[in-house]
Image (cartoon, rainbow, N blue to C red; front, side, top):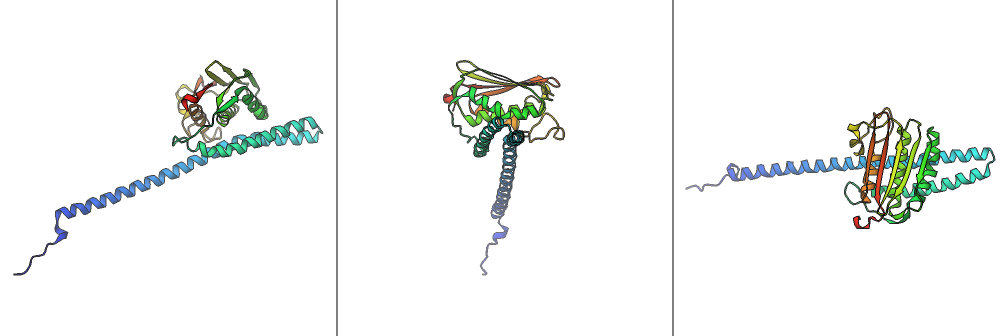
Length: 268
């Protein structure tokens, strides 16, 4: 009698297993493709953030260089020396900003690490105002400040600088050359930074959306930018245990308020 052999290709069980393996392979391919797409999105996000954060300090650097040339042409040595001091501060700040970008890129992954230290917030805001004053003047605006003295606490210097610089740049961009007001007040537990402009304002329906990454309240062909400035401000403030709010209305202007804990160590 001839020995009967089993045709494995006709086994329903093995056929089902083979089909299952094919499905697993397709699922793995889909996951890999999605991971690659996410990596590309993260790369593009980082490049947009980097471009924004490096462009902001470059503008006052270029303006300071122009003022130095003007002072030299008029033989104004004191003004030239003052602008050289400003330029040195701006370049040092620019170098520090490039290092911070690697940390900012980790915000979304919750790996962003602060370096809080005792800091005179009043002096820091005074320096930022001095550095950005030429930018405000060139825009046709007036910068009015009310900075409470000796506001000292534990803050991350680069994070606070980034917050104030982005809010001032935002006010200049959308302020329609009208006065800009910056104030600093403090209680025993909280420091409050407010930046008010009298520009195009923000519609009520856009007040939450503008704090999302790559979101803008105006069309891109009207005002340039990537739409990451306010997103960064909110994340930097929240990283220090603080918050940001905005009030205003379209056509009237906006008031951005950042609240930061004086001693946030319990939140870090």
